[in-house]
Each structure stands twice: as C-alpha cells, then as structure tokens.
Length: 405
Ligand code: Q0N
Image 1 (cartoon, protein in one colour):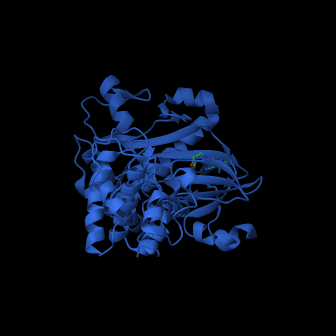
Image 2: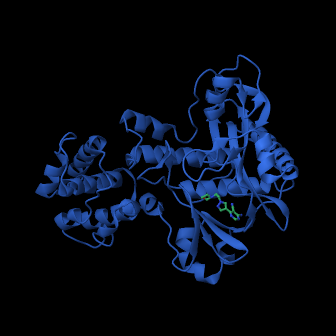
Image 3: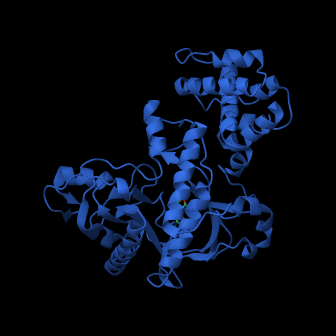
C-alpha cells in the first residue's frame, strides 16, 4: 500500500521537489527510506502543513496504513518549532498520502505540473503554460495543470485545468474565426511532428501547435466591468488608462460601454496600464487603432455570448502578433486565466465579486493566512477537486460540451 500510494504521490508533486531528491522514492521502498528521500526544503509553511498532516494521519489510520514511528513524530511537530529536514520530509510524505485518500489514482495521475521535451528548445515558460520551439514557423504551446493565486504558482496541480484552458481557447478561435485570424495550426496530435508522438500522454488535449508571430509588445485589455487595477485607478483619479468614466461608479459596476485599457508587458512584476496614446507610440498609430478595434469587437461578441450562458466576462486580455495572415490573435483566448469570469447569477455590484474558478483557492489561502510570499503552499485535495470542477463547469457552460475524459 505504501509503495503504491507513495509512487503516485511523487507523480503529482515531483516538480516541487528540490533536485537532490528527484529520482528517489519512486520505487517500491520501505516507508522510512521513502519518507527520507523526500524532505522538501521548499515547504516551510509549517502552520498549515501541520493541519494537513493531521488530516492525513487520520486518513492513513482509517485506511489501516501503518505509519513508521518517525512519521508519527513528524506529524506531531509544532508550527512554532523549526522542523528538521527529516521531520519536514515526514510531514510532506503524510500530506501526499492525504491527497491520495481523497482523490482517486486516475485523477492524480492525470495532473501535469511540468513538461519535458528534451529534443525541443524551450521558448518561454509562464506560470501555467510552457512554449517550445518546433521550427522557424511554429511553436508548441502546452497548458499544464499549474494554478497561480496572488501571483505565485501553488504546489498543487488542478486536475483537468490545462485541458480546459486549451479547449476553451480552441472553442473561441473557432467562434471568432470570421472576425480575426488566429495563430492555431493544429491541436491534432496525429499531425504533430513524429518525434513528439511518444509524448502523446503529455500533449493530448492540452497542447496546440501555433504559427510563430511577430508579437506586439502590449497587452490588449478590454473591460466591461470596473474591477481590479481599473477600479483602483478609477477610485484614485476618476479615469482608467486616461479614459474619463462617469462619476459615482461602484466596484464591479458594469461600464456604460466596454473600454480598451492597454498595458505594457512587464517581465517581472505587474503589467502597467498605459493610455492609448502611449500604446500607439509603441506599436504605431495604425496598428494601435486596429488592435483596439479588434479587441473591442472580440470582447463584445464573446461577452454577449458568455452572458447568455451564465458567465460574465468582466475583463480580458488579448495578445496579437503579425503573421502572413496579417494581424493575428495569439496566446490563449478568453479563458479563466486570461479573464475575470464571474458567475452571472451571483453578480452584485458594490463589492469584489467571487471568481468563477479560483474562489475556493483564494478562500483557503486567506483561511491559512498565507503571507503571500514564496514558496506558495499546497492545497488540500478537496480544494483542488472543487476547483477542478469549476474549470470543467466553465468549459461546459461556455461550449455546451462535456470535457471528454
Ligand atoms: C509568444 N508569448 C507570451 C505562454 C504565453 N504565436 C506566437 N509567436 C511567437 N511568440 C508567441 C506567440 C504566441 N502566443 C507569446 N510568448 C510567446 C505569452 N506567453 C507567456 C508564457 O506562457
């Protein structure tokens, strides 16, 4: 039992383990040696680890799994007493087991936190997606199951999330195809280069090959509602990106009409909102106008559609590039990660809205009083599972289709 449970646990959390522990603990081993192999110096959130570990401990007992005596000591470590490397490992091992007791093996096995294609050069890696170079003309986008909250990637993956992001983008590319060309080449693994076929497991449903574009160095943001940085700016100045808004608006209010609020791409830290004139200076006035008009047209059509299906798209970010087809819609499109999705039936202006997808995650992170400094904590299996359901539900509401298993 230990061997099986342990191996699965490693499969879902490997990416977060320091290099020195990789490659160990993956075989059938004695509990004690397995545990020692995993001391995760990357997990110093003792307080909430302890809570998780205790839950895990109960779960293990109820499953009649024998704990090594040292593991019991590890569970008993207190948050205020700095843990030794060994006892850190002990807590971690029990936490892995805790997830297993709540999520089934198939679900755990499906979670992808890190991609690895040794024959391809990594082009860019984001919080959630990894981009590889295929050749001069094409890139491979892979959406992992990583999730970020409060600007950091958490230690736990969300089952199905990468597939939802990819399938939602594919849906919108098709929905918008008469309005704007997009960078999709294919998402059919059968058409991928043959050296990638052996990675079908890693790629299926969560990847696409896209046309390499000459990217515009701006984020094209459209807002239909007053939220986030725009609400902050409005409160301070009455304007957003230089656009004068009516007086007396409340947080989350619907705007009289959607506004285009471009931002510069910050390599580190937060993107910076800029006035349209500044954007036009960066990309040129002609492209500036085209990007603005396209962004507004896309948002308008998509938001109206989503609203009829129970999702308010409060705001969203597009990225465009130039390809042989002209100005081309790139990156991911109108996903929960690139947009604020709000459940329409709970919409109530005058306060911050609950996020469609990340609410359980944020609630949990507030509850454990994470200081929002790295490394980011792991999530209890229940939070990961409920979050997964929200992503799958968003896919279902938007597309009317079931996400295939
Ligand atoms: C590109 N980014 C920034 C993944 C997304 N079609 C393209 N051609 C050339 N480059 C890019 C695209 C696209 N889309 C855009 N990186 C590469 C967005 N990344 C950030 C990291 O996560």
